[in-house]
Image (cartoon, rainbow, N blue to C red; front, side, top):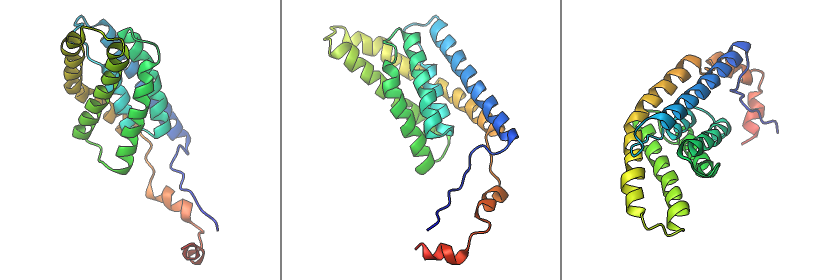
Length: 200
């Protein structure tokens, strides 16, 4: 039996250039989010732009590329918040993979779905930080950490991430790889219909 795989990846020089430019702009957006997150003079209400950007990129990209981007975003989140290097990546990578799988297989790409998935990712990453950095060490100031630092940061990140979603959506619309019907049809040209029926 001959099985054929439709390759919807980068196939032309123009698509390669657009893909490279798109990822460069994603990286610059991540650096900008890191700088803003690190320098804004509102420590108690520090928005987690880096996590929101990682979710937005995973919303539009594939599993592998989204996970690699999320890993770097996790490193930058730890640098911005003064956390253990790599700790956030442990939780952010599977969250972003789940985001990509949901978008590919189950839900539509829109701002509402992006916002609730970003909120869920923020809650998971912050709960893991709370558990491993404070609860296990029996920190007596849990209520202060939750109410004055973590909760305000999550609350301020969710509405501000809508702008991040629009920027990533625009980049993907302008620089995304679109595969025409002719390119898809060319994969199946020359396929014997009788041969295809014999598979089943």
